[in-house]
Length: 228
Image 1 (spheres, helix red, strand yellow):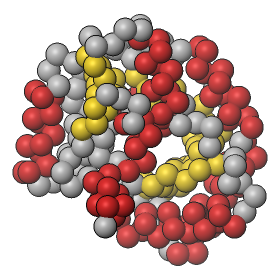
Image 2 (cartoon, one colour):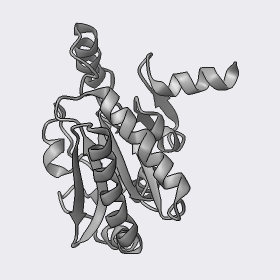
Image 3 (cartoon, one colour):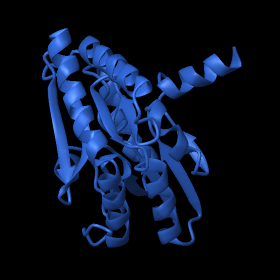
């Protein structure tokens, strides 16, 4: 069995409106034909429906907070672990939500800021721009990282940013931990492949036998910076 852990953002979902991005996104499923596709994404169950791929195996959603079994049910053991992490970071997440709202208002960034709850407890703070304005999310990411570094929550929370989204979530909730959990549940695997365009996914890619990324990936920028 070959399994491919894939973040659909900028891989299965085009990273832009260009024909080149569309071509690349359309060609990837053909490359992975025959592999068992396992999404590793910040999307939830509903958001995953927008991805043009068939996911019939395990699913890793919400940055690793939720693991869905091939039966379509949430893995109960993993849910309990995530809920424990959520409750441990509950107060910090409430304050992060207030901080994100303050950053948005102070900078007049026009962001949509939400505090997402799951299983009755706060899970993450997410800030997006309704028109995808990259400058606004970059400014929010910088301000929230400064708030995080200057505050008492470095061991409790982490800040993750893409060009479209800024997310603050419990530091114990990580995609690589969920990938490792699923790998152990899968048992014997002939080959594992990690697919992503996001620099934040470096840890889960390192768990796989091979890593596959777009040629313009931020991960390759990191490699170039380290070598120079």
